[in-house]
Amino acid sequence: MQSLQNKNIVLGISGGIAAYKGPELVRRLKEQGADVRVVLTDSAKEFVTPLSLQAVSANPVSDNLLDPQAELAMGHIELAKWADLVLIAPATANTIAKLAHGMADDLLTTIALATPAPIAIAPAMNQQMWHNSFTQENLNKLAQHGVIQLGPASGEQACGDIGLGRMLDVPELVEQVGGLSTDEILSGQHWVITAGPTREAIDPVRYISNHSSGKMGYAIAQAAQKAGAKVTLVSGPTNLAPPSQCDIVNVSSAADMHQQALSLATTATVFVACAAVADYRVAQVAEQKIKKHEDAMQINLVKNPDIVADVAALKAQRPFSVGFAAETQDVEHYARGKLAKKNLDLIAANDVAVSGQGFNSSDNALTVYSADQSIDIPLASKTQVAATLVNIIAEKLKS
Ligand code: C5P
View 1 (cartoon, rainbow, N blue to C red):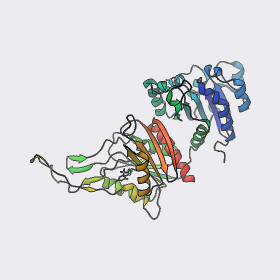
View 2 (view 1 turned 90 degrees about the horizontal axis):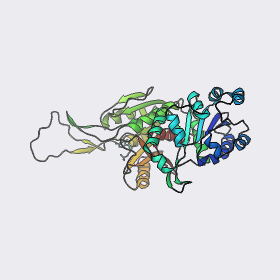
View 3 (view 1 turned 45 degrees about the horizontal axis):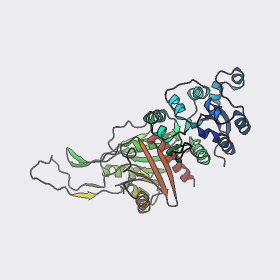
View 4 (view 1 turned 30 degrees about the vertical axis):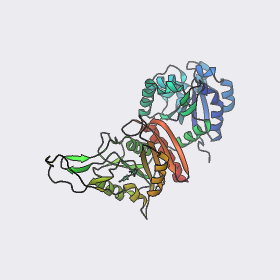
């Protein structure tokens, strides 16, 4: 089936070298059933001609906010309303900066401000520009406003540098765009997601815990809810506001989380275990605050139940079960080991030894393993990574 059947896509092309892929992108989007109208920025016209884009899209190409003739045919507000999706590919650092500041000084950015449709950007730029903190701040701001980020990919760049910043290859980009049009694909589904750390009491005032912020689990909850699922978030203590419209069940210890998660799991379509659950709890929690006497003391720990493994072992009403693996070495080896041992359908692994991603960070990069496949989700905001992960899970559920 065509993944973009009857979808109206405004394709905004801004002025980077990847603009030359525009005609190919239009052809592939149309092959998937989309009706495509192209909007070019001035600098994009240096890389790709309006005529070739008009020929492949079979629609007039727009490039001027103040062109009376074009406005008569389909004005910029009409174009903004016509769109089911505004896709900006390539999105240059300059266009990203303008979008992040709500500027509207050309036709493309004006449409982006005027459209009620979702906006997706496929960034493309030199790797140094990509890593620049201005660019990253702008991208975070756009993610907070719900702009979807597709890519970039890593590899050799037109300028000779090697690194992150290449526009996704056209087939990959079209596949991800196809995944986005699945707006309500999760309607009727119930997702149960564990998030955050657990706290294992030592005595009435002390506990053992970890640095998990809960951001990744909360972002997955939000993405699943946006895609139409009913979401229950079983959360350890975090400083985050729960995503609106998600049911939240607050827990503290692994035992609490285990009990709540297991009783919810039998009603779930999908169970995502994102929580950093303490592996051990204190064997004998002291009833009174422990006083300091000796120079050394010992606390006996006993193993906590494995929540996701117990969910995945359910004989009846077993949900599609997804785990996480935070590793510091041999990521694939350990992740695949947990996938098999816990009987999971998918495991999302990240290398927490790499700074700037994973634990307590706002960004993440994941590799998602199933028994026979692996898919990389490149470094991006947790909001964006969550949206991609939700799409991957949705695709797996279909197969
Ligand atoms: O075995 P490890 O703790 O590394 O596995 C991580 C995965 O297992 C995560 O998905 C985590 O949420 C889940 N887990 C769990 N219950 C535990 C320990 C881990 O659900 N007691």
